[in-house]
Amino acid sequence: MSEGRAKELEDALRGAGVRLTRQRAALLRVIAAAEDHPDAAELHARAVTAGAGVSLATVYRTLTTLQAQGVIEKLEFQGEPARWEAADAPHHDHMIDVDSGEVMEFHSERIEKLQAEIAAELGYEIVHHRLELYVRRR
Amino acid sequence: MSEGRAKELEDALRGAGVRLTRQRAALLRVIAAAEDHPDAAELHARAVTAGAGVSLATVYRTLTTLQAQGVIEKLEFQGEPARWEAADAPHHDHMIDVDSGEVMEFHSERIEKLQAEIAAELGYEIVHHRLELYVRRR
DNA sequence: GCACCAGTTGCAACTGGTTCGCATCTATTG
DNA sequence: CAATAGATGCGAACCAGTTGCAACTGGTGC
Image (cartoon, rainbow over all chains, first blue to last red; front, side):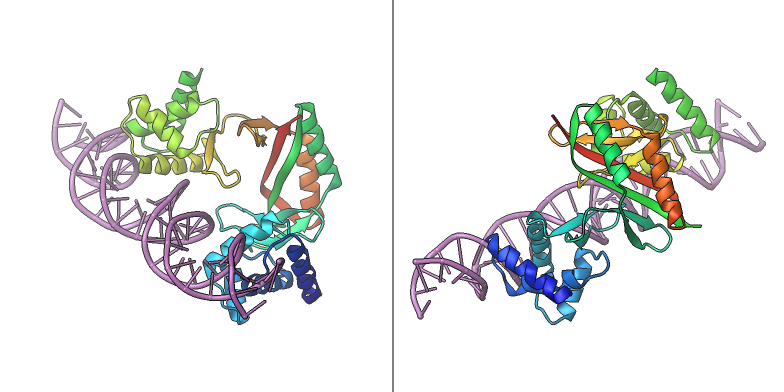
């Protein structure tokens, strides 16, 4: 599944006029295969382990490029390095277990609607939002 | 009003066994007087302008101390340096105008409740949360 | 008032995550 | 297969924030 996904992404990028280099292809594969939310250093480590010669600088540049293409999303949690996730899943927010560091995803249509209402009341429209719940198991 | 508020804070801190130095008093005054959400460099600039000799390192250390005392709150928006606000107002979230950079405050009891429900359903309780709406005027 | 000392400060050096300049390389187009 | 716009690797730079250390100072006890 992730193999196919990586291929899809390659085609999408080429279509958008983004040059498909060996390094970018490797990163796309790593990202498509990731089930978690890795940071740049972790993605770099995985790409290198997978046999791809990539520099950390290129990882950063590629992540920025892929984000601009809407292929991945940047997550900035409290005081930790930025993490990344594939943008193929429908919109969702994040819940972080403060004890284990585990990141979970959730979605609430009702919260989304309330947010839009609040913004609208004040004469604004939402461009983007961020909702993070820092939680602890009971 | 902000003068009185700064005095209140001084007493509260002294009561908590936090030594009240010239630098801390100056920062308390600057923070109590601030109507916006300044970052460390800005607070430092204001304190210096107000005639207080304070180093930036001390500003950082003081902000950490005041936060630990629950006197101020740290706001970390997207990729900008952390901002700070007095913690005297009741809990609220933030709405950021992406064009002007202006930060507004809002509160929705219904959203808070929904958040708690979502966490509870998954067996968690909320320790802390962050909700930011990045908006644009219509 | 005054001495004492744990806690605080200023400075400059350091950190960690991320970006950038530049010479070299390469995916794509014709 | 040549041409070239764009991508890469390297190390240096950057930025917000932190820290080690020697000099200072609030607050207490006398």
